[in-house]
Image 1 (cartoon, rainbow, N blue to C red):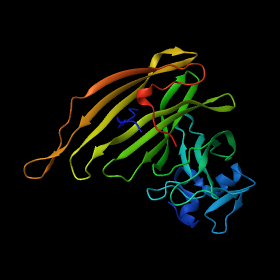
Image 2: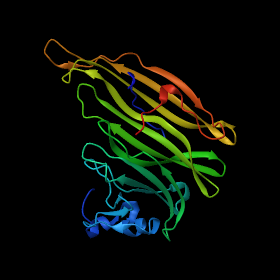
Image 3: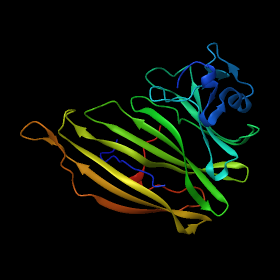
Image 4: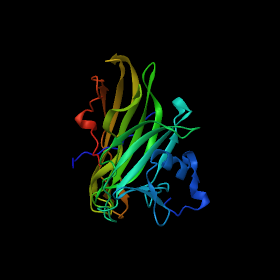
Length: 277
């Protein structure tokens, strides 16, 4: 785990299938949505998930803070006839309270018919352990990669419970629809985070930063460049003579990066690389 961790900002519930949970937010009718995408899936005994052979579980509940594993849906503003869906595919044979093992399948769904237009399996994105997945959400900022190509983002937040050595970081992935295919075009750009070392009461050394992203005018291989501006900060808090914890921030540092599409992906600079599941 690297020493300098980043706080980056992008400028741009587990329960039974009662009627309140069957229709929820942008997902609409959760059961109908999942069964349309996975017609061979069978309902679990407790009716809170569907099961694919041999032991892959698809939760039919929405995520919350205590249980981040759930179906995530968001209407895509750039194409408001479409629904973005992130489906956790959990290996129930090896997952436990100490960690999950699983994938995420991304679906682009027609909102009227619930028919799946594009889908892409992302292996391992629901796998965690001591550094646990805290949140999965869509980012539908204005990522206009080309005149006829818009991308959407998927954010995955990872965190620990440690007070002495806190770690919290969110990685961003960008996906674009090209023809009939859904493609990953950027992977593992850290977009939120916090970390450092301390004594769990006050004294310590902590690191954070902010990054703003903007689409550039220049382009490579048909896709616009992305400009990333990072502001890095440090703090070394100490108790004062009265025992009150006082912040001692260092001088902020700004760095600018340009992400250029190489015909397949936007390579991420090492300084902005996120830890991934």
